[in-house]
Length: 96
Image (cartoon, rainbow, N blue to C red; front, top):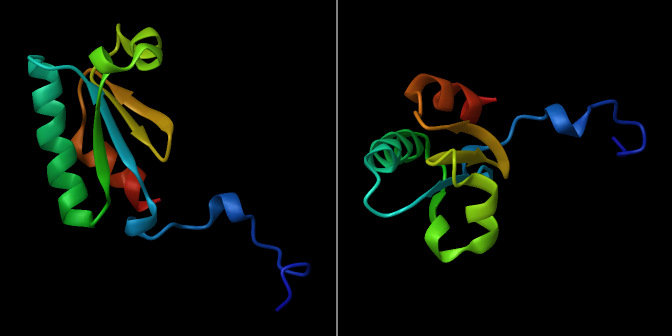
């Protein structure tokens, strides 16, 4: 069917895990960041979702945006959570 006639809203289409991206924003020597990393690593590993870690001490823009909230988890570039990462909530967000 031609895309012109397709009635699917592309914003609601489910993405495959490999098409998702999780970003963990934190800083060194932060126990909450270490806890968040363990959850992100576990969930992303199980679901096959790529993830990356960014250090706010090396990025002035990230520091200004998130210094009060670290660790911060972004899913596909949008803020998902901060401070504490709930494993089941992250899993649900990645399954959407």
